[in-house]
Length: 182
Ligand SMILES: Cc1cc2nc3c(=O)[nH]c(=O)nc-3n(C[C@H](O)[C@H](O)[C@H](O)COP(=O)(O)O)c2cc1C
Image 1 (spheres, rainbow, N blue to C red):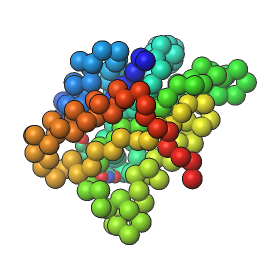
Image 2 (cartoon, protein in one colour):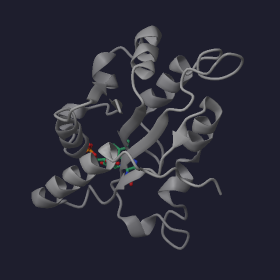
Image 3 (cartoon, rainbow, N blue to C red):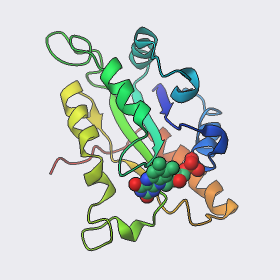
Image 4 (tube, protein in one colour):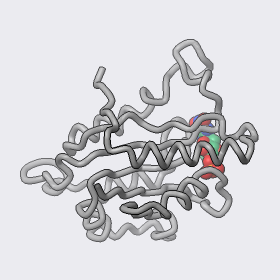
């Protein structure tokens, strides 16, 4: 299985969590890490290059910090540009069919906020629904998202290292289950 990790972080130099996750991930066999903000500092996306990368891999991971209950803005721009009609969806748009899509997100806030009775009222998988709907449209298997919570609350180094190992194991697990559509 070939895995592509697309990292969307607008300031990876200032990142603690996503930088560590990406560094660890790129040491793994069969994994390509692509830092999209760094690839396109002017945000002009090379659509053909991105589509080629996607076609060459079986499991596509979108890794990003949660920003305003969503993704950093370049991911939206990337979707708008790369997931084209006739390629990703629509007549003959089958290039991603059968691949797997995994969202890997870090949140600043603690897990208990992300519940129906918590401060934010919604769970993270609920807030990620546009990705789930997109996955359905482009014919990918939407795997259960990987969520790393509380990263703003001074996550100790050892815990971050354990989380990093857990993340790698999760992403490389060939048996990951799709998230049920409810
Ligand atoms: C513009 C912005 C918006 C953010 N919005 C959220 C949010 O909606 N929910 C949340 O839990 N954390 C939010 N955060 C915190 C980030 O998710 C957190 O700092 C990030 O996951 C840490 O990862 P990093 O070390 O790789 O930057 C936000 C941070 C920024 C800068």
